[in-house]
Image 1 (cartoon, rainbow, N blue to C red):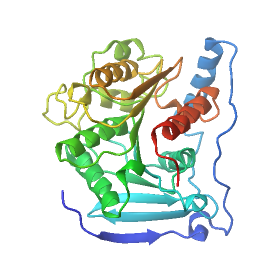
Image 2: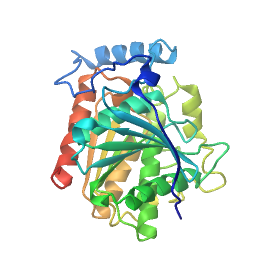
Image 3: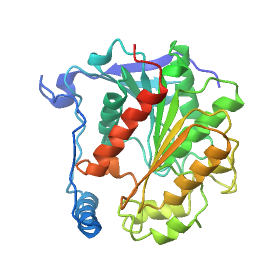
Length: 329
């Protein structure tokens, strides 16, 4: 894929974003979160919280932290958003976020807020969010082409791939894996690591957790009929077989991919997919870590921020990054 120069860049001033000259301080990782006396109590809390979420009673309004830079870019027609942390100007680390949404959902304020947390956790000087093309209008390989063009632009900017951290959750986890496979196929350098949160690793629908957790997953399960039906009959793949490695990277040759951290909830639809990815990555001799957070639904850390499980998952990301990356400059 050939890249062209950035076509447009719009820097949104703080006053335009918030209507005032003041903004909130950047997020910091709390020491702990809500802990429950039993799993029943935890599930009751998650059910109440997600019920309010789906009823739109938990609003999300993205606000740029004080002194941070927020840009909207177009890279050869690919929509990209960039956040830069003024406290990390000397850092060489750069993060790339590939958002979830079943390949049918666009970048949202939830992911912009998550990007702030991801940048803070990794000590990244900047994070790029790819608002890739989505189904049903755009099918495979549209999202992959968009992600690859943005990654190649980072390389064109002189960013050392050893300093690039790729985040992908849900469909974004699928896309992150497919991006790494694309880079390998095209003899391009791999990023430092893949952080895969509730990754969608196969388009197949018959794994045990898809059935057993259909009612227990209070984010992606039957409670969320649109997304539940979407991952049960994914449109993005078009006529490609669901077992094809282009859609289901657990069937791909993963050799020589970078270290990866996989985080899944014990009650989510994709629990078994995370386990299968662990087994395949281990067989292909990768440095890989899987953490299963008991009783947690899909993408819990983004959607339910006050849980102790969420805080632990964020701390694990921070520690994994520091373990596998060169010392921050």
